[in-house]
Length: 224
Ligand SMILES: Cc1cc2nc3c(=O)[nH]c(=O)nc-3n(C[C@H](O)[C@H](O)[C@H](O)COP(=O)(O)O)c2cc1C
Image (cartoon, rainbow, N blue to C red; front, side, top):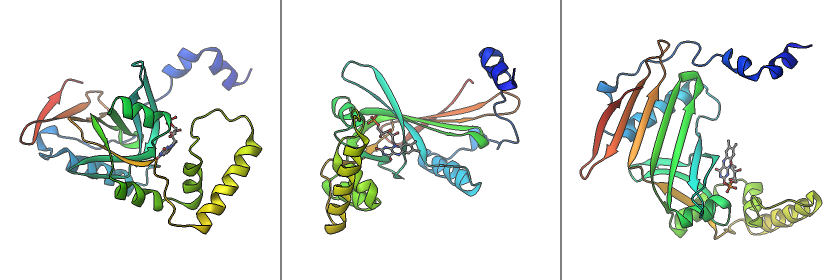
């Protein structure tokens, strides 16, 4: 029996044996954190970029559907400023429907090599027509053509039908490069809560929660 087969026969033991938070980890002193979570987030993100971490701007977007059931998927972060954290998607996709019914969401970032997690929650608003169009036009031709199909997450019965539709959409994008899909949306999540979580080799992890107040942000260290 190979070691891989042995592992699969004892999934619990195999998982228990896997390491987490290995290697050296950065220090985090919540008492020295800036007043504004945007600054701290950008400094953690730039650490991830500087150290060559893979897909440092990928994050999990969690939403809730009509029935109250949660859903989640990975998206790319499109921007961060004082108005919030931005991501983009198709309004007719499941996430787009969910956000139109419950315009609130959570975002989760995880940079494993740094043992860092950031969690945000808050209301989500769609962008203006101009912002949506600008984001759409910055995408690759194939990504624009795919969006124009407007069929994300629908059942795919026939790959040949998809390939043909994509080819047609690509030709359309080639002929009319300024063509914009009016359902493409740049969303902004304006967090009411942002939590920074730093793993420590000692397993006494550090957590700092920012809560939005009428005038700015409150900062609260949390038990790990
Ligand atoms: C690293 C990564 C980045 C992604 N970025 C996006 C994105 O920016 N926008 C998007 O609509 N889907 C993106 N996706 C695909 C989504 O995870 C998801 O499959 C798709 O949006 C359909 O989700 P929905 O059915 O919940 O609407 C990305 C997937 C991965 C793995």
